[in-house]
Each structure stands twice: as C-alpha cells, then as structure tokens.
Length: 167
Length: 215
Image 1 (cartoon, each protein chain N blue to C red):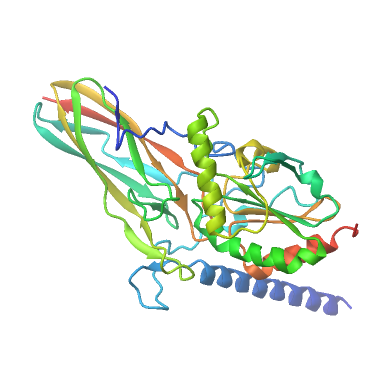
Image 2 (image 1 turned 45 degrees about the vertical axis):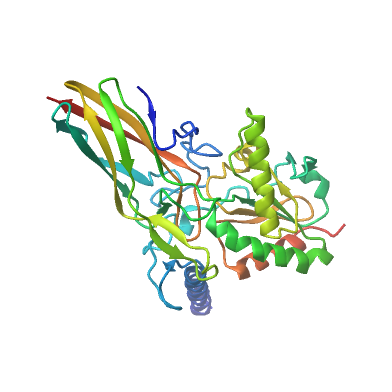
C-alpha cells in the first residue's frame, strides 16, 4: 500500500530542485555550512513496538540545523513550499492520519504584513497507524524547503524509515 | 622603511576587518526575522546563529571569466540570449518565488535598473522555480504563477524561466538569490550568493559599468 500524505502529494519525490544538490559546488570551501550539507535530519524512532490491531502514534522527530528555518506544513503565502511527509506503508499497516506541529509566526521587518509560519530546531510529526501482526517497514521522506536569514535553498527530501514490530 | 610598510599593512588589515564587520551587521539588520506579534524593533530571530551558510562558504570561481551564454524563454515565450546584451553592463540574478531574501532584493534591483538604465545597465532575472515540462497543463499554471508573482513585485526587467537548464554552467547555482555582475565585454566582475547589502550591490554594479569599454 502506498500512502501519500497529505492530499496524496501529486508531487513525486523531488530530487532537490535545480542544479545538482548532491554535487559539491565548485566554490564551496570545507569547514563551513554549505547548501549541500544536511539541513534537516531524521532523528528517531528507528523501531517501534506496537500492539497489533490497536491504534498507535509514531512520533517522528526531526532536527533542523542551527541557523535555518523551514516552512511549516501550513505556510501563509501561496508561493512558499510547505513541509510535507511522503510515506509508503507496507501491507499490514494502515496509516490513519498524519499530524504536523503548528508553525511559529515570524515576519521580516521590511514586510511586516507578510507573516511566515516556520519550523526551527526539533519538530515532531505524528503518524497514527494500525498494524497487523508482524514486522513492517514504513519508508518515505520529509520534503522541506529551508532558508537562513540571507539565503534560500531548493526543496529537499530527508529519508525516513521506521520499523514497526506488531505483536 | 620596513616599519612604515608594516604599519601600512596593519592599517589595511584593520580597515578590511572593520568593513567586513560593518557588512555583516548590515546583513543582520536587513534580514532579521521577528515574531509576528512582536512590537517594532523587537529581535528574536528563529535563526539565532544568523546565516547557516556563512558568507565565507562562497567565493565564485566564475569571477574574472566570460559569462556563459544562455538562451532562455521569457514570460512571453520569446527566446532571450545573454549574448544579445553584449556591450551593456548586465546583472544576472537567479531567484525563485519561494525565496524570501529574493523578495527583499528584487525591489532594490528594480530601483537600480531604473537608476542606471541611462548608463546601459540591463538586469536579467532568471527564475528557479521547478517546471513540470512533461505536463503542459501544470507547466502553463506554473508559468502563469511566476508571471503573476513578477507582476505583483512590479519587476521592470526581463524574467527568464528554467534556471535548471543553465545552473551547471553557472557554477551549480544551489542557493538563492545568486547574482552575477557582468561588464560590457561579457566578463563576470563580481558575484554574490545570498542577499548582499544594497551598498555592495551598487558597488558591484559600478564595477560592471567600469569594467569594460563603453560601446
């Protein structure tokens, strides 16, 4: 079973925008944060133990690198790219819902009326599942678009994998 | 003699350090994020470290080289080549609709286009939004949205589409805005990655205007 969350993201996994996101830029120097360094990391869990047939909430923790912010799941401007989860669940696992945290509202002083809803630091995306007995691997990715105060980076995907052990 | 030389070098280094600190302070002032409900003057950025991608992370190797030519479509569907602007100082600005710092930079570029038009300056905006080239309906919508955005921002210079098609030739542009300053001979004389202070942009425009012989 393949689940695209939410709204079945007609958007396929993006490779990360324009250019070659995995290729080191020719002018990058070592030792500094770079556009190709990981901007968001999946922290945990790698595995969850659940009771089969019973609803369980998998709380997926992500860390946004210091100095960066990413748009929330509900950005307030049409042109902004929201954070989204694109997850594929195997047979035997039903995903009932996915819940994103609320963003924090900020604004640039030059555009006080154009508020931004963003995530910083650690965020938790909650996936409500019901699993049949057995081991199941939920795989997918979190799509995000990050900026620091002067620069924005093309959309990226951070891989997510959670082993569900249902008994 | 040696002492005088040493003092001159030391003074130069101190001056450079002061200018650099001043530039960093200016950047911070320009691009500070404050809580939406904060009173004017409040300061509480979600990115307390300032920039994650330090300005030291970038020095373009294209400086001093001939600008790679390109031919891209504008918002009206016409082909536009960089080569057609030879003889003019040109700014090539990579931007996207989802890029907040670009939205700060664009109004400056509009003003500067107007201010320096008489001296031949030509700014070209190259949009980096994703385009679904295999889906005509989506592509149409995406182009319209970019055009709407350009209209809302009152962009008064050509906007070309599909940065992806030329990004590698321009150093793999992977952070926005990225801006190149090209002299009348087609040579890149300066570039910036991320929003630069307006004064720095003006200074780079002057380099582009004086860097090549007038046509």
